[in-house]
Length: 201
Image 1: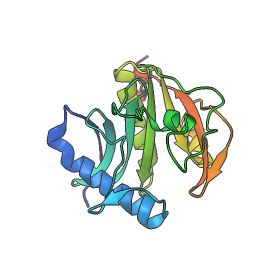
Image 2: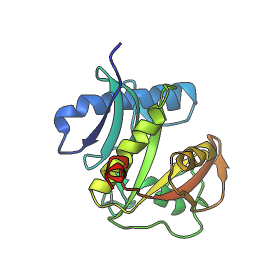
Image 3: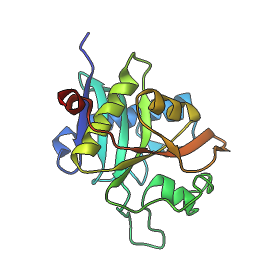
């Protein structure tokens, strides 16, 4: 069996690798819609939304081009749309009440709009040993490379515990909240120096 590779796909630069993004969107549909029964928009076997735009970075773990895990990265100072509603990123838009069904009390303070702050969402991974850790390491390395200082996360409490176990220093942005999809916590982690660089010092 082919080994798992983890790639960083940065759009629009890597449009030639959009097949991997499509495979990741299919995996998201399988996990979030089919398995977890979240009421998310989907069509043609893929799950996608307004934050899947052509200025997004994806960390995608795959085996022979078939996605087995991944996550989406967005800079917090980008805006989407120019109509009555202008979106930015998920945590901030939920806080501002722009996402029906999402809790508005995710954060005690208004989430940042900062080119050095990024958001990681739509984290999904099959239960393969070490896969989640690989995805987060590649995400951290990319964020370090582009000069990011912090990464915001939205996920279940277990996600924060995993980040702590992997050496991050998560700081909750608000209280644990819940909706029909489960319990969620918004938290921030400082971007770490990549492990390979630490080893050199």
